[in-house]
Amino acid sequence: MKSDNQLNLFHKEVLREIACEFCAYFDRKKRIRLTRKEAQMIIDYYAGVSLKPSSSKAMDYTGVKVSGSGLRPRPSAQAIERIEAKLAQADDPPHEWDYVFDELINDIKRLVPYKSQLMKLIHMTFRDRADHSFIAAKLYISQTTYYRYRRIIIERAGVIANKNNLLTPPPNH
Image (cartoon, rainbow, N blue to C red; front, side, top):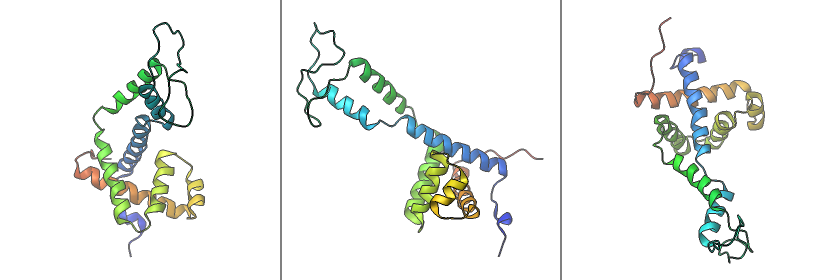
C-alpha cells in the first residue's frame, strides 16, 4: 500500500490556490444571498399600500399587510433600493471556479457514503474558516483524518478544475 506522501496529485502551491478559491466561493455565495428579513421587506414593500404624498414618514403603518402575522411597517423605498442593488450584484456572471465547487459538492452529495461528515467539514473549513482542531473534535475524527479528508476534497476540486483548464502549472524550482 502506498503512503500518503506518494498520493499527492498536485503541488503544494496549487493545493493552496484551490483552497483559497474554495473560501472565495463561499464568500461569493454569502454576498449574493438574501436574508429572511430582506425577503420579508421586499414582500411587505410590494404588498403594502403606497405612501401618501403628504407623508413624511419613512415607514407607513396604515397599509394592510398580506404577509406575516399582524401589521408590520412598510419598508422605505431606500431600503428596497439597497436590497435591489445587492441583487443586481447577483446578476453578474458566475465566477469560473463556482462551477468547479458546485460540481464537487454535487458529486459528494450523490456519490460519497459519508457525505454528511464531508459536507460539514467543507462548510466548517472553507465557509466558516474554523480551526482544524475544533473541526476534528466536532466531527469526532483525528486531526490526521481531518487533513486527509481536506486533501481529498481539494484534490478532487483540482481534478475538476484541471478538466476545465483553470489551473496554471506551478513554476519550476
